[in-house]
Amino acid sequence: AYKKLVEGIKNAQPAYQDVEDTEKKLDETEQDIADHQKERYEKRIEQIEAENDALKSRQDIIQADLDLLEASGGIELEGMYQELIDLSKQQMSLYEEEAAAARDRMSEVEAGSTEYYQLESKINDCTQSIKECQKEQAEWQETIKRLPIERIQKYINMLQNIKQDLQNFIDEQNSLGISTTVDQYKQLMDIYQKEIDKLLEQQKMEVLKQQIEVYKQYWLKALSEIDEEQLKIYGNGMSKDDLISKITNGALDIQDFVLPEGSTDAQETAYK
Image (cartoon, rainbow, N blue to C red; front, side):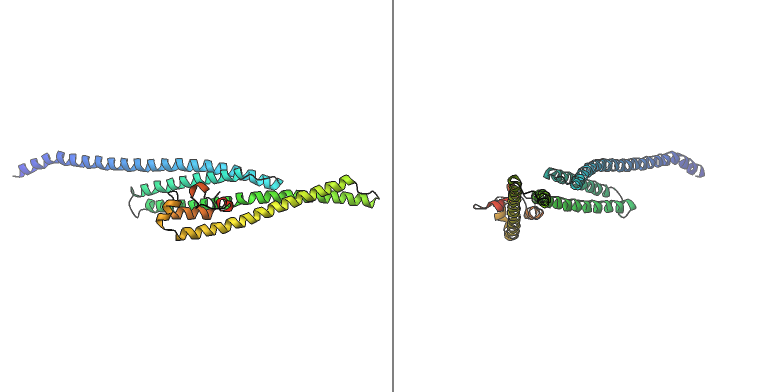
């Protein structure tokens, strides 16, 4: 009986070794899969961050150009701010993609592990970055709206400086007993007229801006009360939240919303 037991143990050892080898291979395979999943996630994040860095670099260049224009008294262009907005929208897409990648990775790691909480933190960071992009875009949209008025003001300031220089010259000439010429009077009159024209233009734009704000509030109130059937007619397939967000941020285009017949130019301008 003892010999049979010993012989049985000897025969069982290879089978046991086979089981051990199989379990070891399974463990190695699982580890390979885990390593591959982590490497795939890291490469995805690396690509997203590289693209984001390129966008930020382009934004920095545009902002430096804007700062230089402001310091030198130059005229800032709407296109430069629009490019900043477009780049910011691309950044938002990348942050959304990064958050999605982190959520996918969370499903692959152990809940409650260090990496799990790191991924959760990354998602929160992406959400915050998206909100910052939205805030920047709203600020740049407001700047674009102000630029025409600011350009007029710069032109008015330039006219006032020219007028003051000419007046100082005339006063100096008069103090020397030299009379003011007809051409000098004409120059002063021309400057005064240009200044008046620009002031009237500026006033008109300020009034229009106030009208636009009134109409925005009107449409926000209307949208808050509109039912879903009306929204299907006027909303061009957009949700109520999307329309309200676009109006609030000044990003709603006239094509995004079907205005009722009889809408005024100011109402339409509010969405351009």
